[in-house]
Image (cartoon, rainbow, N blue to C red; front, side):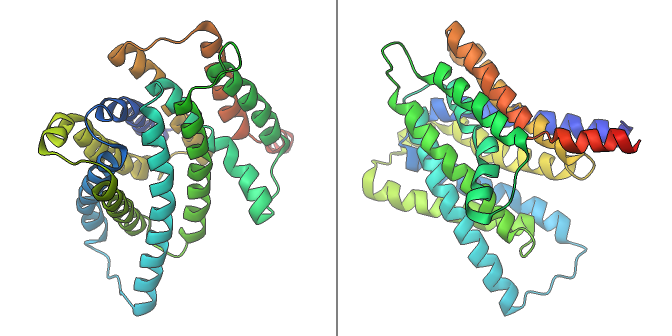
Length: 301
């Protein structure tokens, strides 16, 4: 591993840490603001936070905004932003009724769900490790969420449903990634998600200046750090990191969410819950590893 790859991996590790702690900010923010209000302000702020990055990367580019490009940008951003709106709304509602750590691990299941969705909807075959990972994920989810008497917390169910939409979000991003600039797509989708959230908030939630003020720190962290800074570090890091390494490092987000929940919010996990977390994390790693390709490389060497 050269110096550039080591630096890239470190940046991705910091990104995973920021995203993991973001679950704590969402949990704290839910005490002062409704889910849609919190997300609306957070994603609007995140959209603004990405503008300097966009301008910095495009200052030397001579980008021609043809009608076709503008249509593709807007179409891709709105579709991705709408799916993100559903996924983030379910996540924010769910985290109100569960712990930050559990929400982080349950949300992380989208990593294992993406290949399954790709097989079902896009007919893309997946290696056997995907299905092994799904078995570990199912066991882990059971141990983490199902309590004695087979009861499941409502928050866990809502976050779990949200993980399916996060998996769908990855697929729609993949569809438009080659047609739209990544930063432009992010800015438009964050704006879409923020606008939709605020519209719903205005209809169903009481929005007060006091609530926004009390949730100022979680909102700033969620918008500036989780979106603006972390996304920037991810873009820089993935330029030199190997895709497999990047995916595994970023999946540490779920581990950091548990640690942040324990340290900051004093959350506790029962022994079976800890085992469940280990199983889910193993599922994330296994589902991103194609052992057949690794064996072929070793034979070739």
